[in-house]
Length: 153
Image (tube, rainbow, N blue to C red; front, side, top):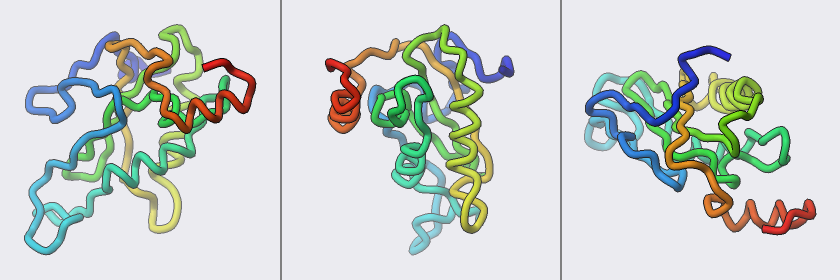
């Protein structure tokens, strides 16, 4: 596990649009775009859409629970910079979880590979612990999946 991916709280850099972790997997694409070209910043690099990233992250499955990280509420926010690098604010069900590398590898695979090279050029995961994860962050779909596995949520 690399030390750059372990943080005790969200510590975005000044001016970063993800200064406050969100409890829902929602964020913004805030690069300037040319009129009539909604997905391409003024610099010419095509940026991935947040909704597409969130959908692709549904392929990332928590290895212990077998439910995707979006429906578990583990993705707090997504930001895509002008170089089409995604920064994901994520948490885990427990700070002691030993599976950060597995989840990071799955996220990288889901977002950077595929037809045309993937949605983004690279990813960074900012592991955050505040606010702490709790069952209230699980989506309705995630609750249905957990119930089908025998969990009482």
